[in-house]
Length: 68
Image (cartoon, rainbow, N blue to C red):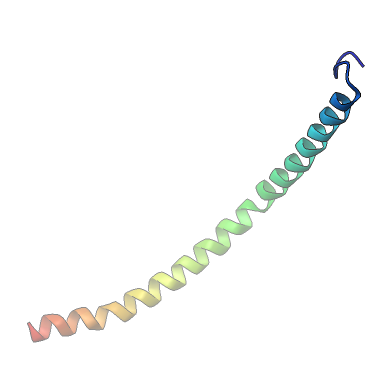
């Protein structure tokens, strides 16, 4: 009991912080496990969006060059 302090509330406070620490640790472990999958999905979406924007912008740029 001396580790948590004299008042009984200190014990519950320390246990509360330990529970928060373990929950946060579990969340971070799950995020790190899912990180490669998230990266792959993001790369696929960025490639699709990049191709679409490139193909949409290319004719507009060529039209401007022709008119100018």
